[in-house]
Image (cartoon, rainbow, N blue to C red; front, side, top):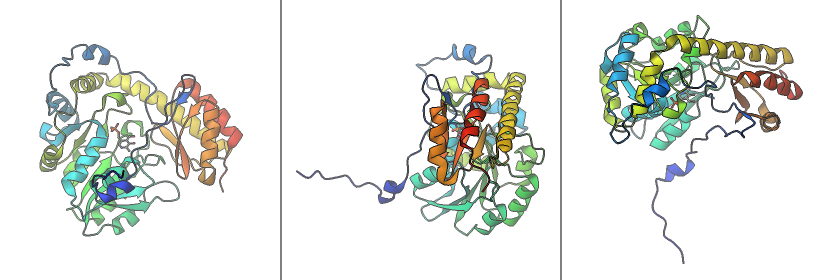
Length: 355
Ligand SMILES: Cc1ncc(COP(=O)(O)O)c(C=O)c1O
């Protein structure tokens, strides 16, 4: 008997579902999802004891927005809090694009971009990265058409690692129409040490009214499992995000944990410094071994392994290091102290040198 199949959107079949970093065995290091190896900051566990799980959360995350507004020197209405910055990316697309419109971004970049664009049924325009793994911003500016509604700039770029400099950013913004929304995805902002790197702040938002800055508590703040991120931009753009957003999606535990984390900035900075130190040690060690590792400004390094990607990932995995293979390279997150030497030892055995 032939079963009739329901009619799905034909283009959904070609959308690749989000692939999560592989789970690691108990005796392996999970270096596949750019997570934070540290437990949540002090105060988070205590804050969560107050949660009333039988109640819906305060839907606009008012307390978090007020706290962030003070830090950012903007109004609370200029901030939206979302279940991870992943949700905000989708909301930005929903708020700007109809079927014929285009979302422009560098490639390779965050894997969520093509999936979220595809899920909405709008068009992705991908501009290849420069050979050093950075965004090719002049080529991106040239790829803007009258159908472009949203440009995503990822700095530092996941998974390759380089940041966008202030000069590159300003030249890009000057070259594109002010009617195109630009999302500056700074998921890894706290790990950036390059003084030339662009950084979203109130002055930048003031100068560029078509800008939204995206941040997350998943990475430096170590709250990936609670799902909370935010965006800062013009109030009317944020109102559009609020209009398309899934209601009540940021849970009360996530809101309380974010506020407790913001109360512990010195502890955050200490942990970030430790991760940055490990990153620098790993990158220096890999360069010395002959790996062509691009500038690494997030909590991860990128190994351009080309055809040997699967082999290299399997080699690390056999050594108890679960990494992320992404097409033409392997991304390794900066993890626990003991993973550092293990990674360098294992990398030495399989080095794919500069071609
Ligand atoms: C560049 C970038 N943007 C956004 C996200 C989404 O993070 P989250 O939804 O946990 O805030 C990630 C996650 O890895 C990322 O790498």
